[in-house]
Image 1 (cartoon, rainbow over the protein chains, first blue to last red):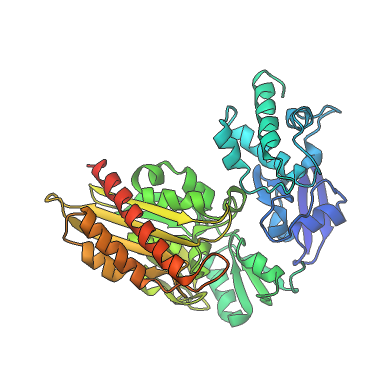
Image 2: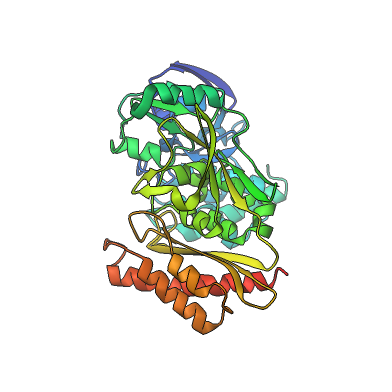
Amino acid sequence: MLVKLSVNGEKHEANVEPRLLLVHMIREVLRLTGTHIGCDTTHCGACTILVDGQPVKSCTMFAVQAQGKQLMTVEGLEQNGKLHPLQEGFMAEHGLQCGYCTPGMLMTSYAFLKKHPKPSEDDIRWAISGNLCRCTGYVNIVKAVQHAAAAISQGGA
Amino acid sequence: MIPAAFEYHTPSTIGEATALLAKLGDDAKVLSGGQSLIPLMKLRLASPAHLVDINGIPGLSGIREADGFLRIGALTRESELEESEVVRSRYPLLHDTSKVIADPLVRNLATVGGNLAHGDPANDHPATMLALGAEIVAVGPKGERRVPIASFFTGPFATSLRPDEILVEIRIPSPPARSGGAYLKLERKVGDFATAAVAAQVTIGANGACEHVGIGLTNVGLTPIKATKAEAALKGKAPDEAAIKRAAELAAEASEPSADLRGSVEYKKDLVRVLTARALRKAVERAGSRR
């Protein structure tokens, strides 16, 4: 089945089996390997991407369901060679250890900060409650998101 | 994990969808939010030969109060419920529930209709809808029918929906003044199914007695459970500590949990007792603040 969609502003089309999961299309057909497959069972959120602006788990959606949709993956955060404030925040606050959950954490936080530009710590913890970090580095992840929120509110992005 | 191959259908009207379901019979499953169905397909616990994706059918989404009901379109996402002002201000039980279903990412896709049509006793909306006395609107090739929620769940993962029917809407009677509700869920972590959860809805009459009582139990039986004896025990009585304690004991007796990694039978039954009492107290308190 022919699927046409846009990823990070770029149009793509591919002939895929209906059973192909969206995350496999992104990684293996479009070769955008920034999006990770963690648990593959809808628990961990490493595969989180935005579909029409909403963060969802791309291991729990078929590629054919993304027909005509606007997708954003972690590769879309960097603009014109400049890292997004969230990426800067994760670096500055050591928001990653092994880095496996990071693309999902970034995409969830990206959508969250668009809606809640001045979040409390509790708000952030609520927002990332569907993303698991097996290094358990949540304290620094929360700091990284706060870092980004502050940078964005000062006109960083 | 790769699901078995299937044929993918995208009807654009309800008529088209029900005609497809009538033709394909048991080989077809309706794809709504997919947050229960797709994991089952990946584990090969479900291998439907056809998926009928209803997401392209207009008019199946949205939340509005009309004709004495809160009308929720089947395709309404859980996150929409969570953010809805009318739900937050007038249906606290539903608002509580919407915040504890799975996790925020799953709630962006998961639908209210799917949560019910899946018939999973561990899902959260069934107990809530039982407590609220909702009705299900189903459409099939022969037209529309309404099913009271109390007769909707017929077994584990089984509902009274016919194979050629689609759940299109959930109708919740608008609560009278001095009504309140609460949903209390104990979960090991965000995203896990409930160890046990209790939905309670009450309406307090002018004389201070309970005019309406609804109590639903999550994940403590083969189907979602309406704790009818507990409801009857509290109805007509003032919701004092003794009456709430008695209703909570009856709710625990109505539960039929099985032992698993989340706890023993005894533990879960006692949890139902504790959660029922807490949910009723919270419901009564909320009813009092909404005169």
